[in-house]
Image (cartoon, rainbow, N blue to C red; front, side):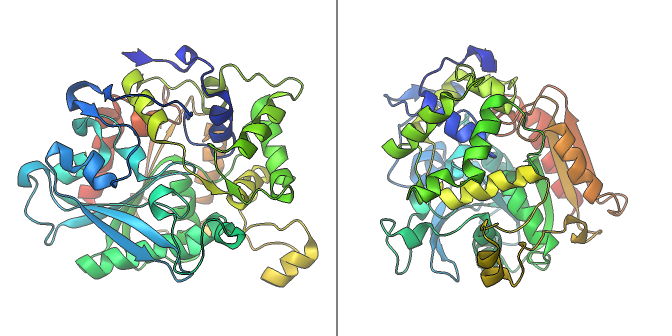
Amino acid sequence: MIMSASSFPSLALGCFLLVLVVELHVALGLSRGSMLDVGSGGTVAPPVTSGICASSVVIYGYKCQEFDVVTPDGYILSVQRIPEGRAGGGGSGGTNKQPVLIQHGVLVDGMTWLLNPPEQDLPLILADNGFDVWIANTRGTRFSRRHTSLDPANADFWDWSWDEVVQFDVPAVLDFIHGKTGQKIDYVGHSMGTLVALASLSEGKLVDKLQSAALLSPIAYLSHMTTALGVAAVKAFVGEMVKLAGLVEFDPKGEPVANFLQALCANPGVNCYDLLAALTGKNCCLNVSTVDLFLKNEPQPTSTKNMVHLAQTRDGVLAKYNYGIPGFNVMHYGDVRPPVYNLSNIPRDFPIFLSYGGKDALSDPKDVQRLLDSLKLHDVGKLTIQFLENYAHADFIMGVNAKDVVYSQVLSFFKNQQ
């Protein structure tokens, strides 16, 4: 069954609102239940504690390995490796195979790439086509909720934004993969996963380790997210209301966040009924079983500081975290304004595939055009652009036809780099 956004009820309203507001990923919720039928992939269990490999990869006949990667600032990140295709297909053992890192967006984790039947999931498609696949899980999510010295109950554990993902998480994971494979790495990011790649590339952090990047539903600016609901939430985050109230961990499943969301819904002109359509756009191609499974496994916590920083991109400037007080910015950056990520500094000969949708209310086409303007001097043949008129934000990771419409193009792009 294919569902449009308008088909979704207002189930788990608070969680929907949270995730769809700032950079916000896709339709999220707090529902729980029993095992679900997900089509030809069979049955998949509810929220897992055994790890992504055991719950979502090995059960389909793929080899999968779990690794821990420690960042320079002490966070312990969970990383999965799928070294070959099903039953050994696509080559043997990962030796001399092209590695690819897949990075999720905000308020979800690596599981979000593995919710459809295996023949529709990007990591497994890449493995079946001869790639050595690695899946990242950002700090603070359920399998990366660890630190060498800090406990998640400690406020210092949550003192980070996507700046630290750019500075520490992505480089640490890429260094680990490079150490294991000795090869440059292809990269796939969705939503915030594209933002951290663009910011890193603009500072020259990843150029020596990356071979190319595929950016799905790219986020660099949120200037054209103009719905009343989205604007109310962005203003709340930019004003740091929740942070000042002592909420350092932004956990969609916690009572403080639920109260915050209820307050947002009370804003004049805010319609909290059809949140998915209002904030992500009308996704064309979602399967009800996949969405139900998504709601059982997500959302994941992040830091409130990260949500505030994402909201700051609505100002039309892509910059490091703004502390809001000139003295604090001077203390951290030596200037009253935070440094800007200059996307025009991305090497012009670096291969980029960029895919965006005409119905996406988060990665709005006007904001994507602004991103493309930053890349207008990119070398001819090094920037591949795909525009999908009917696609919205969630279609890129859960669309039943994404395999044919998007992933086939990603596969072709990567193979052209070899």
